[in-house]
Amino acid sequence: MNLPRSSFYYKPEENHLDQLKTEMDLQDHIEATCLEFPYYGCRRVTHQLHRERYQVNHKKVLRLMRENDLLCHIKRRRIKTTNSDHSYPVYPNLTKDLEVCSLNQVWIADITYIRILLAFVYLAVILDAYSRKVVGYAISGSIDTTLTIKALRMAIESRKSEPGCIHHSDQGVQYASHEYVDELRQRGFQISMSRKGNPYDNAFELRAS
Image (tube, rainbow, N blue to C red; front, side, top):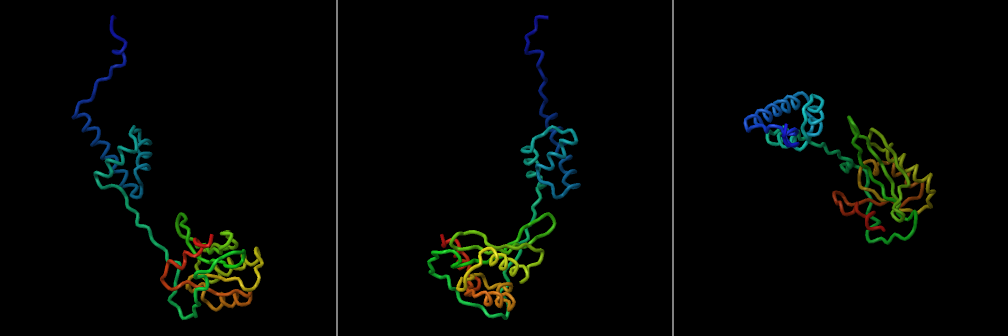
């Protein structure tokens, strides 16, 4: 037919009104998806649109969601792991300006939390300040003295430390309780605690390298 090969691949361009109509239709579907799944981000919304036979990439979906204030903002709940408001005795910081030069000279104890699907679990860890190795740990759904004692006993079993080792922690009730302190004294530990509300004392393990 004496037509150039490019004619076979020719596709009429959509005019501006057609493009606008297509984008508005896409926007309506995005809004409907966000209403049905209020915690979906742009990628999940994109996957849902793909399941509905919409050919669109996540960047465009992100732009439309941002322009229409459809991005979900999940407020992360911070978990407090240190409760120093108690009547138990506290102890001075024995690690200040201390040069750590051997194993089992100083153990650092702390608690953090791990976010899982529907809740949090708590992790108690004991670190050898010289080797920077975790020598004891315990995980529990409750943040109590039982958690920290399990970590301590695991550390003692794995290292069999000699009396005189410094046990350093914050002033949290889990470490200041009579039960925990009695366990330390029976094993011959020196008890050391960081100052209340002073985050720089807790950075000791970063200096001990």
